[in-house]
Length: 234
Image 1 (tube, rainbow, N blue to C red):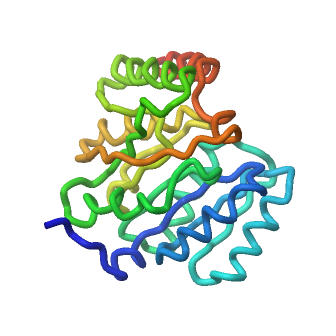
Image 2: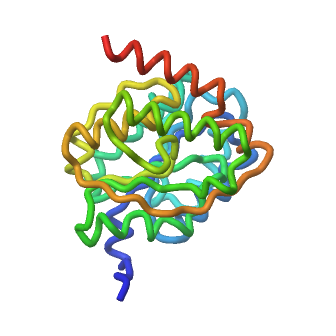
């Protein structure tokens, strides 16, 4: 019988959401997470639109669930996520999740993603997107990045570029993320592997819209990440 998460489990979980120019998309994301009983650290990554105003509007509705941090300039998803990881430790969580803030990920998957952490099956979790639903360019780029992650970091995963991941607080303290941009996805996997942190893969749903398809790891981004991987070897 599958373990059913308790309110205590959810209260012990914090979701980190980096956000850059997501004013038209982020509100339903963070409010759906709050409505399910999870806490959040939302990092406004130097947005040039009114993303911060939208986040603060949601915070007024859920003052105890949403914690807001803001970078003065845009630093990239890697830096924004690491800012969230550093900040979240102040709240002494048991479990930490990172998700995209553009609506690509569903809050309905949160229970499934953190369940292996709560039951002790794993200390880190990677949310695996259905590749068949990906646009071709994203699917191809992801397959390439899976291969590069295997070559450079010696770890085999089904979805190396997922932005939906979870980790225990103790495991989070062991990893060191330095990536500025999308390399963070592969770097997270490398750190989990290098620190011998047991991890599990969990299927997640992905919501593709024209806006979400415009972001993430396409072939161009994959090439940039490859260059960064090579640099990091020296």
